[in-house]
Image 1: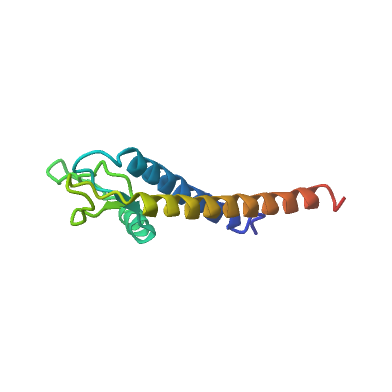
Image 2: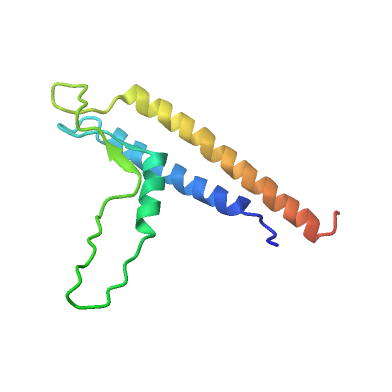
Length: 130
């Protein structure tokens, strides 16, 4: 039986997601005036698919076997090449980015509060209920 029952690892995964989302939003905001820049977004579904695909490893038993190629992209980050809001080809919508930033901050703070609550509960148990 585990003390943490998977809660802290789930919170850690959520914090990794919010961190990646924060970096992506910041990158979009920083490139709001860059011509032909395409806004990026973080897709939870894509992160899940990338995690499932990255856990697969092949056992190369012969030197003639092909090596698997890995990509250098960040898992879960997608961009929409079809979309353009401005004449210069830029697809960053500043209002959408600010709303996403606020939503992501709320999600991050909620995860931190949940983690603190879990750790405080464990501290109470360790101290014997005092």
